[in-house]
Image 1 (spheres, rainbow, N blue to C red):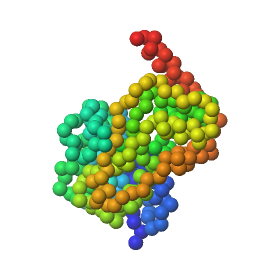
Image 2: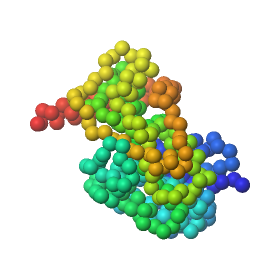
Image 3: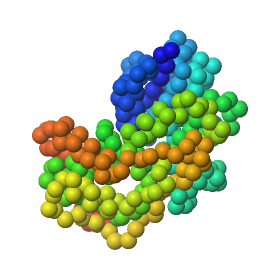
Length: 304
């Protein structure tokens, strides 16, 4: 039988990559409605759509980063249709643990101990709380810490931003070094696919990360090598920011280990993507945005 997979948020960074990945797989029909095709804040429209489609699996990756209200409406409008789908995978976040009290390689135990105050963290925390407290076994929440890859916001996301910096003739830079638990977005897609036949899992929420955080400076050095640039890497502030990493052992003990792509290989793929797709017009706009950001920093420094 052909599996019906519904991706909610398919025009966003992770959703777009998931859509691309699953469209290449056999025996899966992928549905990923745009905002024009499905208004996620319209409860009746969501009920009608999913009641008609009856998807086997729903992957929920939709979030409005600056609106708790709209993000929760979109989530609840899908959640409330659970009678008409097989299982839902929620793309969660390490921000559910509250960034003010992170611990290196944090496990799932501290959830509920502190509530995030930022909009994004509170959104993900609120959704996870609902899923943790439901008696329905149709939900899995995968908490990602850092995901990178094609289609991310290259104006601000570290790896893509520095690849584009180099293409535009700008230096590779970081504000301050830190250890970060990054996952290649294609690895996320492959892992998600691999658990389809294992659902439902024994628990609701799991950290999905490598458990082996990498320093931003070491990633910068990989980019420098792959881009074959002679420009020095700029580290704007000394010392180390607080580590952002998780412990994935609970998940991998239950479903088996997963082999992550080496950073040299994943970043090489991302470099090739930008080299093939970053147009002259893109470079011009990128330089303008970079200059605006520099001017904002200069202005704020003078103001102080």
